[in-house]
Image 1: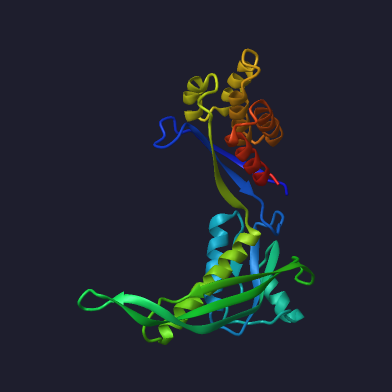
Image 2: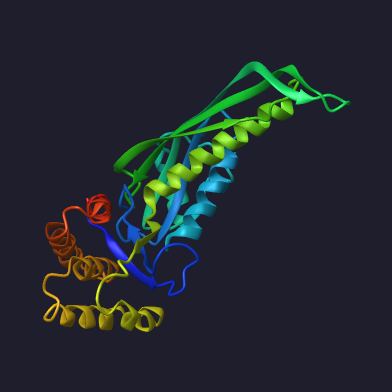
Length: 293
Protein backbone atom coordinates (compact mmCIF):
# COMPACT_ATOMS: atom_id res chain seq x y z
CA UNK A 1 0.00 0.00 0.00
CA UNK A 2 1.36 3.42 -0.94
CA UNK A 3 1.90 5.80 1.96
CA UNK A 4 2.33 9.57 1.94
CA UNK A 5 4.48 11.11 4.66
CA UNK A 6 3.71 14.42 6.29
CA UNK A 7 6.99 15.42 7.85
CA UNK A 8 6.78 16.82 11.35
CA UNK A 9 9.99 15.86 13.10
CA UNK A 10 10.90 16.73 16.66
CA UNK A 11 13.71 15.51 18.86
CA UNK A 12 13.49 15.56 22.63
CA UNK A 13 17.10 16.53 23.31
CA UNK A 14 16.58 16.11 27.05
CA UNK A 15 13.98 13.33 27.30
CA UNK A 16 12.58 12.24 30.61
CA UNK A 17 13.06 8.57 29.74
CA UNK A 18 15.56 6.86 27.45
CA UNK A 19 17.78 8.50 24.89
CA UNK A 20 17.11 11.18 22.26
CA UNK A 21 14.37 10.40 19.79
CA UNK A 22 13.23 11.40 16.34
CA UNK A 23 9.45 11.70 15.98
CA UNK A 24 7.34 12.39 12.93
CA UNK A 25 3.80 12.12 11.63
CA UNK A 26 2.95 9.95 8.65
CA UNK A 27 -0.29 10.00 6.72
CA UNK A 28 -1.81 6.66 5.73
CA UNK A 29 -4.20 6.85 2.76
CA UNK A 30 -7.83 5.92 3.30
CA UNK A 31 -8.78 2.30 2.80
CA UNK A 32 -11.40 3.41 0.28
CA UNK A 33 -9.97 6.22 -1.81
CA UNK A 34 -12.50 8.86 -2.83
CA UNK A 35 -10.00 10.44 -5.18
CA UNK A 36 -9.88 14.22 -5.24
CA UNK A 37 -13.45 14.70 -4.08
CA UNK A 38 -13.62 17.87 -2.03
CA UNK A 39 -17.40 18.06 -1.60
CA UNK A 40 -19.44 14.99 -0.73
CA UNK A 41 -23.17 14.75 -0.07
CA UNK A 42 -25.04 12.02 1.82
CA UNK A 43 -27.75 11.28 -0.70
CA UNK A 44 -29.92 8.82 1.19
CA UNK A 45 -30.18 7.00 4.50
CA UNK A 46 -32.12 3.78 4.83
CA UNK A 47 -32.65 2.71 8.42
CA UNK A 48 -35.02 1.04 10.83
CA UNK A 49 -33.46 2.88 13.79
CA UNK A 50 -33.69 6.47 14.97
CA UNK A 51 -29.98 6.19 15.81
CA UNK A 52 -29.30 6.97 12.17
CA UNK A 53 -29.32 10.63 13.27
CA UNK A 54 -26.47 9.95 15.72
CA UNK A 55 -24.59 8.04 13.03
CA UNK A 56 -24.91 10.88 10.51
CA UNK A 57 -23.91 13.58 13.02
CA UNK A 58 -20.74 11.77 14.08
CA UNK A 59 -19.82 10.58 10.59
CA UNK A 60 -20.10 14.06 9.09
CA UNK A 61 -18.35 15.80 11.99
CA UNK A 62 -15.47 13.30 12.11
CA UNK A 63 -14.94 13.36 8.34
CA UNK A 64 -15.01 17.15 8.14
CA UNK A 65 -12.57 17.50 11.03
CA UNK A 66 -10.03 14.95 9.82
CA UNK A 67 -9.92 15.51 6.06
CA UNK A 68 -10.12 18.17 3.39
CA UNK A 69 -13.48 16.85 2.26
CA UNK A 70 -16.62 18.70 3.21
CA UNK A 71 -19.57 16.39 3.78
CA UNK A 72 -23.15 17.66 3.68
CA UNK A 73 -26.31 15.85 4.73
CA UNK A 74 -29.11 15.93 2.16
CA UNK A 75 -31.30 13.50 4.12
CA UNK A 76 -32.67 16.08 6.56
CA UNK A 77 -30.74 14.63 9.49
CA UNK A 78 -31.73 11.07 8.72
CA UNK A 79 -35.45 11.68 8.95
CA UNK A 80 -35.93 11.86 5.18
CA UNK A 81 -35.38 8.27 4.11
CA UNK A 82 -35.36 8.25 0.34
CA UNK A 83 -34.53 4.62 -0.24
CA UNK A 84 -31.65 2.64 -1.65
CA UNK A 85 -31.96 4.34 -5.03
CA UNK A 86 -33.99 7.54 -5.35
CA UNK A 87 -36.28 7.82 -8.34
CA UNK A 88 -35.19 10.09 -11.17
CA UNK A 89 -37.21 13.09 -10.02
CA UNK A 90 -35.88 12.91 -6.45
CA UNK A 91 -32.33 12.38 -7.68
CA UNK A 92 -32.41 15.37 -10.00
CA UNK A 93 -33.82 17.59 -7.29
CA UNK A 94 -31.22 16.53 -4.71
CA UNK A 95 -28.33 16.84 -7.14
CA UNK A 96 -29.56 20.28 -8.20
CA UNK A 97 -29.90 21.43 -4.61
CA UNK A 98 -26.71 19.73 -3.41
CA UNK A 99 -24.07 19.65 -6.18
CA UNK A 100 -21.07 17.51 -5.20
CA UNK A 101 -18.09 15.59 -6.51
CA UNK A 102 -19.38 12.33 -5.02
CA UNK A 103 -22.44 11.09 -3.19
CA UNK A 104 -22.75 8.65 -0.32
CA UNK A 105 -25.65 6.47 0.69
CA UNK A 106 -26.11 5.06 4.18
CA UNK A 107 -27.93 1.81 3.54
CA UNK A 108 -29.25 -0.98 5.75
CA UNK A 109 -28.49 0.92 8.96
CA UNK A 110 -29.82 -1.15 11.83
CA UNK A 111 -29.19 -1.50 15.55
CA UNK A 112 -29.82 -4.37 17.95
CA UNK A 113 -29.44 -4.64 21.70
CA UNK A 114 -29.42 -7.43 24.25
CA UNK A 115 -29.67 -7.43 28.04
CA UNK A 116 -26.79 -8.97 29.97
CA UNK A 117 -26.27 -9.88 33.60
CA UNK A 118 -23.46 -11.05 35.83
CA UNK A 119 -22.13 -10.97 39.34
CA UNK A 120 -20.07 -8.04 40.52
CA UNK A 121 -19.15 -6.38 43.75
CA UNK A 122 -19.77 -3.01 45.39
CA UNK A 123 -19.52 -1.48 48.83
CA UNK A 124 -22.48 -1.25 51.19
CA UNK A 125 -23.28 1.68 53.51
CA UNK A 126 -20.73 0.37 55.99
CA UNK A 127 -17.98 0.26 53.42
CA UNK A 128 -17.95 -3.52 53.22
CA UNK A 129 -17.55 -5.12 49.81
CA UNK A 130 -20.54 -7.30 48.91
CA UNK A 131 -21.48 -9.30 45.83
CA UNK A 132 -24.38 -7.99 43.78
CA UNK A 133 -26.12 -8.96 40.57
CA UNK A 134 -25.31 -6.47 37.81
CA UNK A 135 -27.33 -5.76 34.69
CA UNK A 136 -26.30 -3.99 31.51
CA UNK A 137 -27.13 -3.67 27.82
CA UNK A 138 -24.85 -4.49 24.89
CA UNK A 139 -25.68 -2.99 21.49
CA UNK A 140 -24.47 -3.31 17.91
CA UNK A 141 -25.14 -0.96 14.98
CA UNK A 142 -24.35 -1.92 11.39
CA UNK A 143 -24.57 -0.11 8.08
CA UNK A 144 -23.54 -0.36 4.46
CA UNK A 145 -22.00 2.74 2.95
CA UNK A 146 -22.47 3.19 -0.81
CA UNK A 147 -20.13 5.47 -2.76
CA UNK A 148 -21.97 6.82 -5.80
CA UNK A 149 -20.62 8.58 -8.86
CA UNK A 150 -21.51 12.20 -9.44
CA UNK A 151 -24.38 11.36 -11.78
CA UNK A 152 -25.86 9.25 -8.94
CA UNK A 153 -26.50 6.43 -11.38
CA UNK A 154 -23.45 4.25 -10.81
CA UNK A 155 -22.31 2.81 -7.50
CA UNK A 156 -18.52 2.93 -7.35
CA UNK A 157 -18.15 0.72 -4.29
CA UNK A 158 -19.79 -0.31 -1.03
CA UNK A 159 -18.38 -1.27 2.35
CA UNK A 160 -19.82 -2.38 5.67
CA UNK A 161 -19.20 -0.93 9.12
CA UNK A 162 -20.07 -2.02 12.63
CA UNK A 163 -20.00 -0.34 16.01
CA UNK A 164 -20.47 -1.83 19.47
CA UNK A 165 -21.64 -0.17 22.65
CA UNK A 166 -22.38 -1.07 26.23
CA UNK A 167 -24.19 0.60 29.10
CA UNK A 168 -23.04 1.10 32.70
CA UNK A 169 -23.61 -1.79 35.11
CA UNK A 170 -26.70 -1.18 37.25
CA UNK A 171 -28.91 -3.12 39.62
CA UNK A 172 -32.07 -2.31 37.65
CA UNK A 173 -32.28 -1.66 33.93
CA UNK A 174 -34.14 1.30 32.51
CA UNK A 175 -34.55 2.65 29.00
CA UNK A 176 -31.71 5.05 29.72
CA UNK A 177 -29.16 2.23 29.78
CA UNK A 178 -30.42 0.93 26.44
CA UNK A 179 -30.15 4.38 24.90
CA UNK A 180 -26.59 4.80 26.17
CA UNK A 181 -25.53 1.50 24.61
CA UNK A 182 -27.24 2.25 21.29
CA UNK A 183 -25.81 5.77 21.11
CA UNK A 184 -22.34 4.41 21.73
CA UNK A 185 -22.73 1.71 19.06
CA UNK A 186 -23.96 4.25 16.50
CA UNK A 187 -21.04 6.57 17.31
CA UNK A 188 -18.42 3.85 16.87
CA UNK A 189 -20.00 2.68 13.61
CA UNK A 190 -19.89 6.28 12.33
CA UNK A 191 -16.26 6.75 13.34
CA UNK A 192 -15.33 3.51 11.59
CA UNK A 193 -17.13 4.69 8.43
CA UNK A 194 -15.34 8.05 8.52
CA UNK A 195 -11.95 6.41 9.01
CA UNK A 196 -12.52 4.17 6.00
CA UNK A 197 -12.76 7.17 3.64
CA UNK A 198 -10.31 9.62 5.26
CA UNK A 199 -6.52 9.49 5.60
CA UNK A 200 -5.16 8.70 9.06
CA UNK A 201 -2.31 10.63 10.66
CA UNK A 202 -0.12 8.42 12.82
CA UNK A 203 2.61 9.63 15.16
CA UNK A 204 5.82 7.59 14.96
CA UNK A 205 8.99 7.76 17.03
CA UNK A 206 12.39 6.07 16.97
CA UNK A 207 14.89 6.25 19.82
CA UNK A 208 18.35 7.07 18.49
CA UNK A 209 21.46 5.13 19.42
CA UNK A 210 23.42 7.63 21.51
CA UNK A 211 26.61 5.58 21.04
CA UNK A 212 26.80 6.70 17.40
CA UNK A 213 29.31 9.35 16.33
CA UNK A 214 28.14 12.98 16.14
CA UNK A 215 24.87 12.43 18.00
CA UNK A 216 25.47 15.46 20.19
CA UNK A 217 26.35 17.54 17.12
CA UNK A 218 22.94 16.74 15.61
CA UNK A 219 20.74 17.60 18.60
CA UNK A 220 20.38 21.30 17.85
CA UNK A 221 19.74 20.58 14.16
CA UNK A 222 16.96 18.14 14.94
CA UNK A 223 15.46 20.50 17.51
CA UNK A 224 15.34 23.05 14.68
CA UNK A 225 13.74 20.45 12.37
CA UNK A 226 16.72 20.63 9.99
CA UNK A 227 16.65 16.92 9.25
CA UNK A 228 18.21 17.30 5.83
CA UNK A 229 21.28 18.81 7.48
CA UNK A 230 21.34 15.97 10.01
CA UNK A 231 21.35 13.44 7.20
CA UNK A 232 24.19 15.28 5.46
CA UNK A 233 26.18 15.43 8.71
CA UNK A 234 25.79 11.74 9.49
CA UNK A 235 26.36 10.53 5.93
CA UNK A 236 29.59 12.54 5.93
CA UNK A 237 30.57 10.81 9.17
CA UNK A 238 30.36 7.45 7.42
CA UNK A 239 33.61 8.27 5.64
CA UNK A 240 35.48 8.19 8.93
CA UNK A 241 33.24 5.64 10.70
CA UNK A 242 32.38 3.12 7.94
CA UNK A 243 31.84 0.25 10.39
CA UNK A 244 29.54 2.10 12.80
CA UNK A 245 26.28 0.20 13.03
CA UNK A 246 24.88 2.83 15.40
CA UNK A 247 25.51 5.58 12.86
CA UNK A 248 23.72 3.64 10.12
CA UNK A 249 20.83 2.93 12.47
CA UNK A 250 20.44 6.62 13.27
CA UNK A 251 20.64 7.44 9.57
CA UNK A 252 17.83 4.97 8.96
CA UNK A 253 15.64 6.83 11.46
CA UNK A 254 16.29 10.27 9.98
CA UNK A 255 15.78 9.01 6.41
CA UNK A 256 12.45 7.49 7.39
CA UNK A 257 11.39 10.75 9.03
CA UNK A 258 12.41 12.58 5.83
CA UNK A 259 10.19 10.32 3.73
CA UNK A 260 12.93 8.28 2.03
CA UNK A 261 11.91 4.69 2.84
CA UNK A 262 14.38 3.10 0.40
CA UNK A 263 17.39 4.70 2.06
CA UNK A 264 15.92 4.00 5.50
CA UNK A 265 15.50 0.31 4.66
CA UNK A 266 19.10 0.05 3.43
CA UNK A 267 20.50 1.70 6.54
CA UNK A 268 18.40 -0.42 8.93
CA UNK A 269 19.59 -3.58 7.16
CA UNK A 270 23.22 -2.44 7.15
CA UNK A 271 23.09 -1.68 10.88
CA UNK A 272 21.73 -5.14 11.62
CA UNK A 273 24.35 -6.84 9.44
CA UNK A 274 27.13 -5.00 11.26
CA UNK A 275 25.68 -5.72 14.72
CA UNK A 276 23.38 -8.76 14.46
CA UNK A 277 23.37 -9.10 18.25
CA UNK A 278 21.61 -5.74 18.70
CA UNK A 279 17.98 -6.59 19.41
CA UNK A 280 16.97 -2.95 19.02
CA UNK A 281 18.08 -2.93 15.38
CA UNK A 282 16.13 -6.06 14.57
CA UNK A 283 12.97 -4.81 16.29
CA UNK A 284 13.10 -1.43 14.58
CA UNK A 285 13.66 -3.02 11.17
CA UNK A 286 10.56 -5.17 11.74
CA UNK A 287 8.59 -2.09 12.79
CA UNK A 288 9.81 -0.21 9.71
CA UNK A 289 8.59 -3.02 7.46
CA UNK A 290 5.15 -2.94 9.11
CA UNK A 291 4.95 0.83 8.73
CA UNK A 292 5.83 0.61 5.05
CA UNK A 293 3.95 -2.47 3.89
